Image (cartoon, rainbow, N blue to C red; front, top):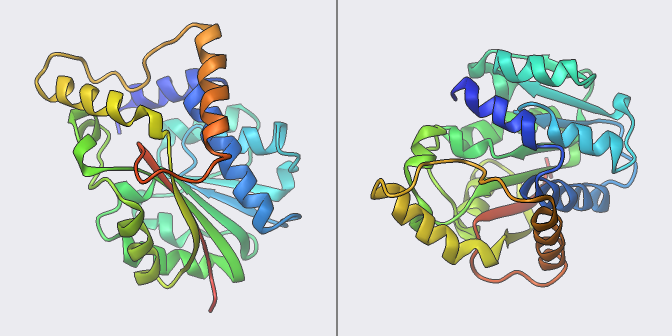
Length: 243
């Protein structure tokens, strides 16, 4: 991905509503699966926003988390934030060297970048203890595909069914999955159409006022507390390693 993408992430991933909702939901899944993990690995951790959330807001210690990131710029930003980071070559991300088998591996907007996702998921199982978990978040719905996906190097967008199918093909047992940001689906369809017709720039995260940021955070936090609707702009899944 382009360096400007990571600059934008570093500018927003500690406070922007979209990140806050995702990080809070993911941490709830994580701590619901393993209340006291010895090691949580954020594979493809970007600039470290989720690790920062885990150690500042979810009560985990820096010794309990580790970020793996193939991009030098992103890894540098995360390291400067004081987070435990290891940089790896892109081709090795599914074969990361970690100090012990992880209780939970997190893939937040990573799987859609990988050509052969089931093969990568099979390799990632080697990093997780028997009975451990993987948490995956990916962009949803092929109808939302736009130049934004192309610019970010996405190979595909997902439905709940296709994500669960890839997890099963990778040797994982899906435990639960759901759509996130369901109320953003129609705005997302309009945005994708405008981007594809060159009527709107492919800005990744439109800036909002602090007040609107708080309102959106509360709205979509509440959405995650209710049963999933059959659509949304992201898909989240929790799966277990039963080997």
